[in-house]
Amino acid sequence: MKIEKWNFAARAAATAGTVAFALTLPLGAASAQDKTYTMKITLPTLNDPSYFFAKSYAAALEKDSGGRIKPEIYPASQLGAIPRQIEGTQFGAIQCAVIPPEFFVGVDERFELMAAPGLVDSMDHGQRLAADPEVKKVMFGLGAEKGLHGVAMFMNAPSSVIAKNAIRRVADFKGKKIRVLASKFQMAPIERLGATPVAMTLGDVVPAMQQGAIDGAVGGIVVWTPMHFNDAAKYVTETGQPAVFAIAEISKSWYDSLPADLQKLIDSDAAAGQAAIGPTANDIVAKSRKGWVDAGGELISLPADEQTEMMKTFSAAASDVAKAKPVVDAAYKIVTDAAQRTR
View (cartoon, rainbow, N blue to C red):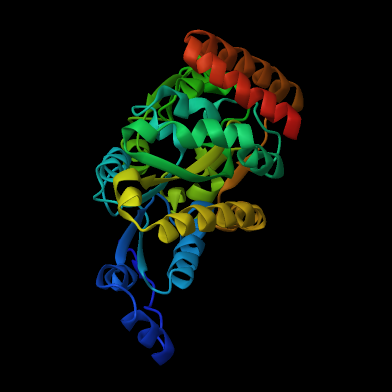
């Protein structure tokens, strides 16, 4: 499938007055103002909230930098599987990655905190949690010693389970192989339902379901619908948990090479994009749910009493995962306390 690459148009040429002013600057200063910086933005998805955040962020940076930052967006894993995207960002071949934080667990195991079930009870709550100063301090700083600079985080969608055979009751999970994100906070709850969790990158899910390697997958309706997962399965059980967040990480080596004014824009435009994404994300979730049904798919809710019992199971599993490692548990407490404050 041919995926569109977005290259945002260069800004208009400098005015004569600006040129005249530049001629009065020392040579080094004038050169710094003239230099342009290519910014490759990578993400594994397409037409979901992460993608629209990336588009908005890129447009703002191009405009606010006067064309000195040249963003290029590569959605749908055009630059490789998620682990390759993360490595590329760490080492500077890619300048920005917008990916669910739990995929960065190889960088620091605390990145998986946002995948803990039961943290949020709505999209709006998820955006408030992601904006909490204590949560941002923890999450944005995790990759600082590993080549990453965090700049934004937001809730992408509530989770659901897509499956070849309908999952209508909690008992239907038993014996199934379910793809999860690379987080013990997702693996442990699925195991307690009697299913086998299989960590797998997004691009492998459709062929794995078609070939019978897995029976279903945890993810979001904002991925299932626009990326045509109905080619592999028709049933989506809306568990709502865990929330799927996305984090924007900048290559620290690239960030450190920028002039101070552009570093400031990288941070401030990302923060503005995070603050603005909520209504867009809500709209995409609603349209994706409708689109799934319109395409012949089915949306399923568990019986209310079983949903309640499942959440108790999930929450107990998350607590046990956190307690197994003191450094994770300390950060988990910061995030869960913030979830209560913002509920």
